[in-house]
Length: 136
Image 1 (cartoon, one colour):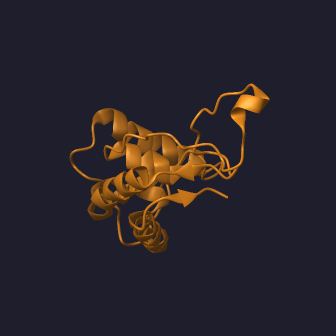
Image 2: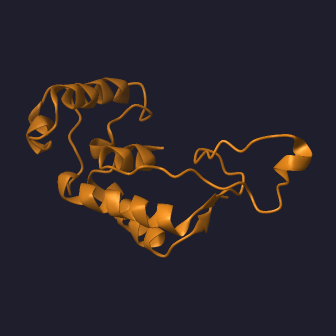
């Protein structure tokens, strides 16, 4: 989810996934909604995967290479955020930090991928550059 959120911040326009191979929607009298958020065997097209990789690659310079100190006693983390963030985006980061006290779910992607987590993002970018893939 954070990966998709980050990609959207950097201009990714999702094309939507194709239904799982072998799923006959006509027989089920159903429609596929193009979701990325389940692991039903849906297919991400090569074009979409490469577009996702390009958007995520744009984010790398803005994500800190070091783990962020998320303590409320120190607001130095604000200095590591890109200056071009809008007031709304900065508020999202602050809200994300507030949520961090309760869990990682609402943490802003810049903070989520900071430090050692950034390497996971780099591996995913490389994976997406390979083309189409199935979400399992």
